[in-house]
Image 1 (cartoon, rainbow, N blue to C red):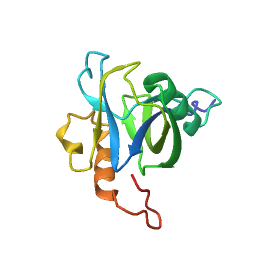
Image 2 (image 1 turned 60 degrees about the vertical axis):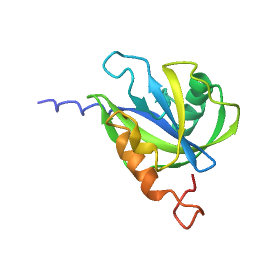
Image 3 (image 1 turned 180 degrees about the vertical axis):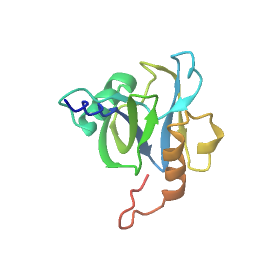
Amino acid sequence: MTPAPAPTPPRVVVGAALCSHGRFLAARRTSPAAVAGRWEFPGGKVEPGETEQAALARELREELGVEATVTARVPGAWPVGEDLVLHIWLARLTSGTPQPLQDHDALRWLTPAEALTLSWLPQDLPAVHWLTEHQTSSAGPGRERI
């Protein structure tokens, strides 16, 4: 008897907690209709042969028109439907001013105190909580400054 094929692992979607001056960027979705108007961390799917960091830098150029340095991954992974999993990465804005070029109609820079005032997509919310709990004025061991 032939063994059943191993299940295909979910495809990774990356999102950026793009940080600057103690704030991070939220982007409001325009589609699909089920999520339009909800907020998320900008990003997208990792293409075959691409690292998560490279995919995120590419997505930030395409979606927001900015350059960023991807620094560290937020702990955790969150399902997006049945075949995708979300990884959130911290990133620092290195050049450009974010503009909603694709998939979004609005952007907001948020302080940790403002973060929970938006209607976030469920899969992004755990990373929002992590950011609000780990924001610090000076980076210590194992802590990334936002």
